Image 1 (cartoon, rainbow, N blue to C red):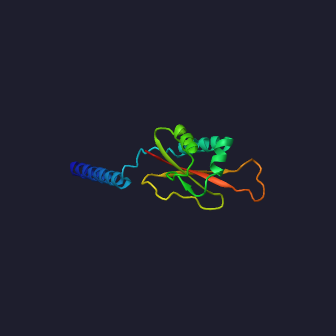
Image 2 (spheres, rainbow, N blue to C red):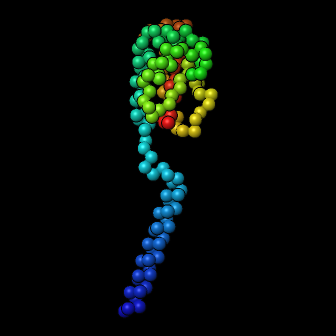
Length: 146
């Protein structure tokens, strides 16, 4: 009977050793993503709020419509009023850039950071009702965590 107890103890020890090794391997494979917080919904809420403020402001809309598209954040013709509005509303944990493009074209950044990039776009028109032949643009906001 004593020999059987020693056998069971060794089986339990081996099982626990396998669990420990498997746990360590899973942590290494996961590369530290355990506990990483998902901020996507917060970022999208901030982006939508900023874009709505710009859409509802007549002077900011005219600044965008008066800009030659495409216009990137660091271009000299990108409206300073739009940069100021965006920079004043960005939380400290985000870094953002914007781009002005035509409404019917793909609007992408020329360079992307290594972090996850969250993007939202808003259509910019002169009035709420669009007229035939009216020039439509989009303001696309790209943000990532710092």
